[in-house]
Image 1 (cartoon, rainbow, N blue to C red):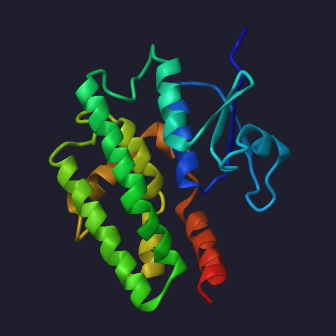
Image 2 (cartoon, rainbow, N blue to C red; image 1 turned 45 degrees about the vertical axis):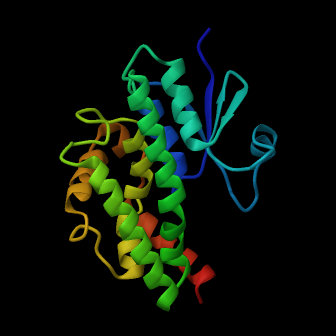
Length: 218
């Protein structure tokens, strides 16, 4: 019997994008169900009663929550194709460390870029660039964080890459002069077939970002 794979998602979410990319990297057929985060479906509340957030992967009726937990589950269940995490235990631990860094050090300033203005926004820009520079240092001269292979950390970062253009326009700054090596890797990631099929048009994301800014910041 074929697997039933359902993804509860929200199209601009940098976290939902991660699950979409992982599924497509593995060639897994799935049904995407769009959520209204202001009026969450009974299914989302049932499948993720603790955090009530997307993405939720429902695999044969069983839920898996939290974006990078979902990515790791996808990698382990469909382990016969396109590995996402490295096989070496040390490299796996390092990949998890850097994903944790991404979601603890990059998430808040990324949010603040379009939720604030004035001095608060300037501080957010500074913190955001500082975090990106640390990540660029870890990337080094590799094409991907996974070396020659698009992997776990790259998937985590691609959610943020998808919002780079909107962040730059809303906060009036440029990432590439500060982090040219990271930007080269970002462009490489955004050209992957699994990513192209998982992203929406950047203009649509920018339009949403301006709407959100009006809500949060005058």
